[in-house]
Amino acid sequence: MKTDTGNNLVEIYSGPSVEAGIVKSYLSDSGIEAYLKDEYMGTIAPWNVSAGGANPVKIFVPDSEMEQAKKLVDEYFNHINKNL
Image (cartoon, rainbow, N blue to C red; front, side, top):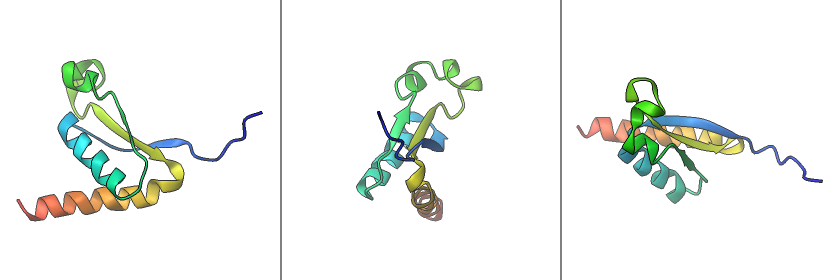
């Protein structure tokens, strides 16, 4: 019998393919396991995975790491916006 570890995946980000890849790498470098959803279809045919093709690629993390992941994503975008 398989035991539930309580690590359900939750979505913490959705955006363009390139940006999602960068955010995923940032999370991975910080020790957070992250997964991309619709990575390829979001690039090839974003309108097939998202209404109007907006923000087609999603990032999921285990729910046990959600708080830390959200902080890192916010930190990343605050840094990016500050340097524009």
